[in-house]
Figure 1 (cartoon, rainbow, N blue to C red):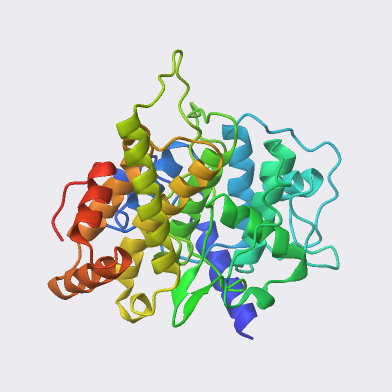
Figure 2 (figure 1 turned 180 degrees about the vertical axis):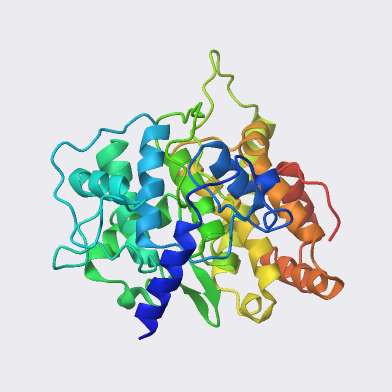
Length: 374
């Protein structure tokens, strides 16, 4: 009964999302939201839309129909889209449904196989593991990425055994690329594979996926088919903003100085310790959600930077400050919106992450170009 009721509510919601304002500034529910920066980027790229009431509905649930629709728009954005030639329709998708084109494309491309009995279940909430499966397939089949080196990555999620067999490798890929991570809980970090996600979180995840793809996204002149529109992946655990951005190309790369090498090694050591403490925190789960959301943004950038380094990128200050400028801005905005009690909580959390070492914290914040006092 609950599934049926949610389906009716979702169907009613998405019908209203067929006509949308063109920018985040026109939405009444985006300003000051933790996901504002990610939403603005997604809107600029034409990936998401809102409703005719001037609302983006950032906290509304993301459905499978919405997800394949945004995947299709991402393919067009990255110029890797190929129109379906002879895609067999799902029995629960009508030609007039806003997600019909995306569903047909996703099925023919092999991104979605359905839930059985020739059903897409477009109004069902998309789970975190389903999202990972579709994104990994997109990066491999559409963006042409070789994901074999990521598929065997091991992560110590407390609920690792709850990830469905069909999703294990895809979750490993998405975690290794920093697209989605985990949720801090008592005693460690969970992946929460069957938990659904919201539109603001999905905007953040899609931003990372687009940046992870080898193509450089182009802003479409006219957003394709206004229509509908997963987490900070679960706000507060995964980071609302860490994006995977290819290293900038330089015509005449300069060999880093010994001082730069020493600074880079130091910040890498600090960041890894910080990330380990974050994943194993027993204090963070006791904080309020805005505190978790705020730290999630920062740790998303930290996790991505370490992934970049593992893939051969030298983390010099210029690269770090340019690559993660948006995440730092988003973090500082979220920090500025915290209450006095929440600021006390985040200060305690950060102190634990840097092992109560003020010099270490100042070094990291300075390296990322963030100016603030804790």
